[in-house]
Length: 234
Image 1 (cartoon, one colour):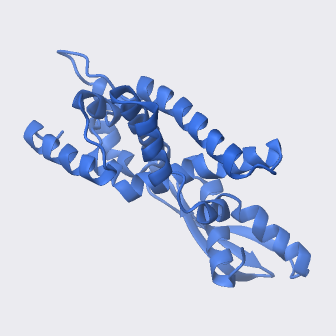
Image 2: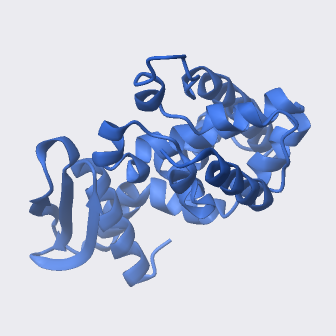
């Protein structure tokens, strides 16, 4: 773990990045602490992000639901649900986390650090929700809403395209009768506990997209998204 003085400087930089200064910085530290670290502490228990992420998830659902309800008054409940899901799914939150470099600010135990926790989408996505929860507890729903609007409910067309990439690509191929789309696993990299899967999207045997991910499903999604961008399909 980094020295406390270094950690405080890191948190200074993060507060500047998110545009919010904590009154109780222990909340921010908690939001960035993975359970692997708190579980390693033998002298005193260091709080991790799990409880605060639970709260942040609820705040995010409320704010995003309110946003889509008010922004799209003619949309059905089903479509609103899909739009919200695209904006706050794990992959979309991971994009936010990488934008803010949250992984580099997090506190991990030695095991999770060695296993690549700083790049694991599920972990850094949870950290975004934990930061939302921390802001809510430190200040108000309005401050949490500002963060969500600025960093989560932004660039929604891009996020929807990524979230729905496989279905959008499949629909386009069916409509144009372009042929058969398949996803091919090219290779697997890394140890069993930290696999990276590499996939290609192939149309009639020709590679049209390439993707990587910690699961085959995520790699397929990246490959479909890459194909959509290359073919300028939206």
